[in-house]
Length: 190
Image (cartoon, rainbow, N blue to C red; front, top):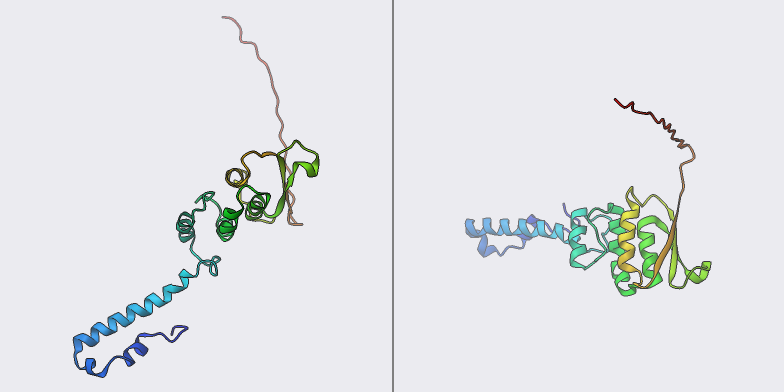
């Protein structure tokens, strides 16, 4: 049973009695009622912003093109796609401003902000990015973040650096190292 009581039997109950005498008209009515019920089930997909967390990834890719989210890449992780799509209209309105950069930072990393040159004593029109990766950024975060940043930042501004902090689980320890040895051998003339 559907949530809204819109079912084939309910529609057929409202079918005009004079038409129920003809079996072919009744069969056509039942087919049309079934199609209407199926379409009503798909109308929830039209509530884009309310259902952004439930929309299929393929639909997000199509809608990003339709909504002209120029900084979109189909290879982004689905969580990043959802965040970018949700803030897409706001980023369009704010292109070239620090707030547009901050929206992209939050979409990729979860938390963070842009720091302007005068806040840290840098060169005019330069900025830094400081972020806390809350598990949103995937393996290739630097590549897609730089592409996103290039499309939303002011064209005259330059990135001085990116600092990303990641909170490791308490029970995880990663150790590593590398060793190398170089030996030069003479090849005898012969």
